[in-house]
Length: 436
Image (cartoon, rainbow, N blue to C red; front, side, top):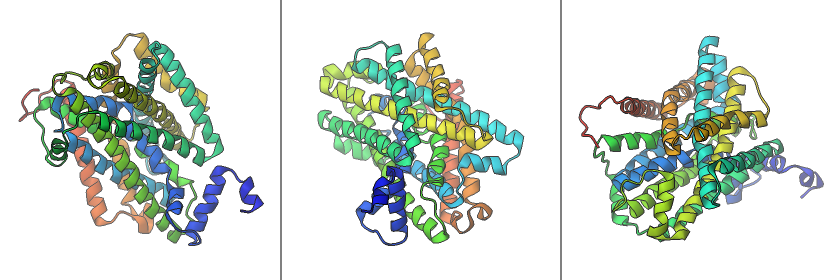
């Protein structure tokens, strides 16, 4: 190793080694690991506290029967995260910047406002989740847990100054903690694996309440800020200098999306499985994070309850940091304006403090934050499909016919289900479904 390589920062060394892979001078499994990072960071949005809330409701209320929804949601998420990553790699622009370039001022400012509201709603769920985990695990008041969460997430965000690689490794470590926690839960909970297999492959919506939960799972899975963020994570990360390098970067990115989101999907399925095994028989009314923790202790023991809280804490802290990154990128992309990260962190966590100080039920706040996301989700999804299918923007990397059809169908499905969630939220009955 040369002295110049030793003096490089971790991010600079990673960039240099990626260049060697693109030039064909470096191969093997360790070479693939150099490209791992953007999808890992984006994947934390698929394991945030909003997912905990909906997955607990799904497992406790309907057993294993809604596992197929988790699988379908993650397959759709894989496609859209891969498209977002490709957009950043090929154009060198992120989704918000392209929206600013392609749309008129009134439209882009409206898009920006809606996207900022969505980012704050996302951070509400994530920030509260981390604080709830800390307060229950260490027996501290919720408001103290929120302060600790704020300090820790701010410390993580400061690592952005050191380049892309330290942040990728920190978030990757927290993803590993969440994953290991749920692997451990699978050995503690009495899982009926035959029913797990049936619930994964046989679609079933027993009643309107199950539909609401199913749409909530999808709403907590395909996240507006994650769609925006992924393009920003790839746009400047070892940018391709020609189409051949971009093609290789897209190849590695697609594989990373599949692997990272497969892990996120497995964690979500494990959440439903754990809730089903622990609560569905005799405790089917468990629907809140706090009651899940208190019920787990007598059912499966203190270890299972503590593991649950550790995973929730890691999820809340990591996803809150990532949500703040996304909000910063959305603002800079749409309006070209950047604020200090401490101010961004302060502004985005204020709604969570207001919710707690007003005495609002925290789980209800998580549910309503998902409704806000339902309004915002069409913007990045439709824009992403429009841009990635455009040859004027993507050139030879424009979506092929099958990818285009899959993206359009996925958009219609997600938007249709979100419309159903909004109808049910406002008490409008859905024809053809019995009441839960």
